[in-house]
Length: 102
Image (tube, rainbow, N blue to C red):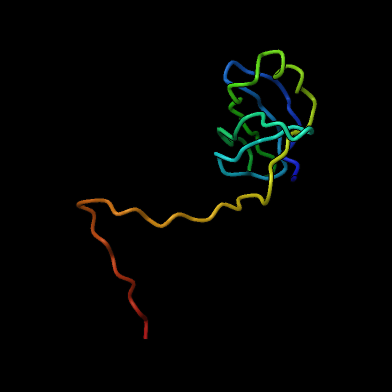
């Protein structure tokens, strides 16, 4: 498990924490007991120390979220380790071919 940061406070939409590195939205987030807390909703603020908004899981109550303030949250695996998706075909959009520079 990789440390994501410590929870700063609870908002109406979820949790806000301060991180040392930016991370892509969508990653699942876990607490110290490896219980799923939610997923990364948004990353905002300075690039060097971004804030991360966490959308809570449906199983999390307001009391559970309040108990996480000041505690560390984690992600499994590598940061930004998701595989890149192939570009989707969009009807009506031109598909450009790569030019060789020989």
